[in-house]
Image (cartoon, rainbow, N blue to C red; front, side):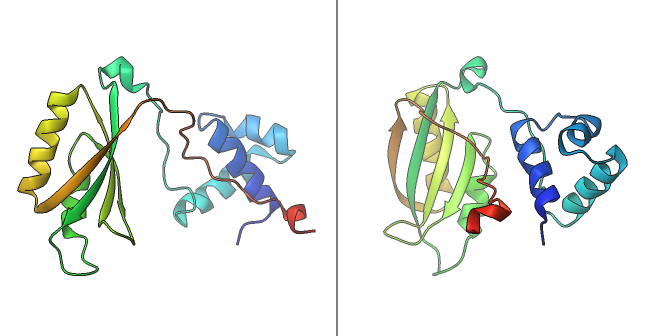
Length: 154
């Protein structure tokens, strides 16, 4: 599905999504038009799912981060409440889980009173119970994936 050149392009874009096609082409020794075609193909196939700026939450006054383990009153395998949770502006991630809780939610908020308001919203959406894990310090946060190299299997 992905060849060595595609993987090289993905690796460069993960580290700098604003890198121009010409700069990528110079690094991987390919014509800029060929790089553009490959990127467009990977976007069309949803291998590249989007581009976004990473913003310091503190700069927006969102200094409190948390993970919330959510128990929901849903039939087994349904994710309707998860979709409603995902629509809340303070929620960054929602993961449907296997284990002793239904969803793992990542949220960013101003302060504890904003978190209380979020918990109340969760209750209105059908959340039965939740447990908050407060983020004290982030050591690593990245959406970048480890891209396997062709020679790694040798």
